[in-house]
Image 1: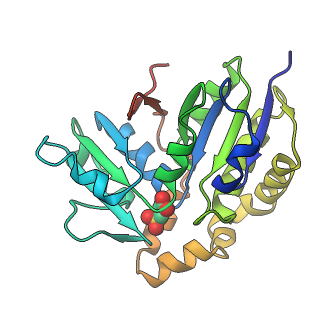
Image 2: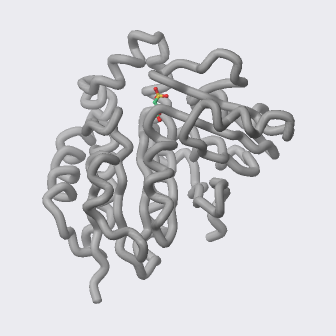
Image 3: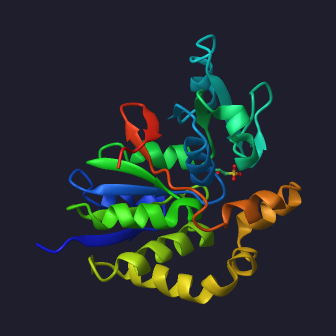
Length: 237
Ligand code: 3SL
């Protein structure tokens, strides 16, 4: 049977999909999944995604780094938030990070019933797509969006994956077609197109525009984080 690829445009729509036999790729380009990919690529032992800020505290005194972001800002009292610049080798190599973010970690929790949950970003696009092509499973690209609403940057990334996989998979929903069309429209100047997005504007207002630029880099990482139990670790390819 031919494998199919679908795009779930927001976490609010996840219940419309049967995911138990599928691979779900969680996508939160600005910035959760970009930072997770970067952190794992830089040697973090594991990143434990938790849905609530308070849950992070239950991991205190275990020697873990505690990272919490809400509405784009680091939550007071935590080691850091969601900026990729906090996930460099000097900060995370050999460490376990407990992370909660506004949308990304929520989407991850909603995906837990899947056969396998992996993390996508522009940083590991090539490596992710090469691996997905070798898997004998349907794929759901789950966009984390913003507070259950559609967003541009996650959809554009989903479209980039659709474009790379379309010759090996059946596109089975209009969301995949729309995502790919949006990617085609955006790909020659990703920064300018993503600049139209509400979250990019939010980040510019917070003076963290360099994070947007960073998260739009292509293929600077090869790691594919995969959920094993409660932790994201590097997939053994
Ligand atoms: O919502 C999230 O998960 C975050 O990635 C949002 S932010 O980029 O940290 O503002």
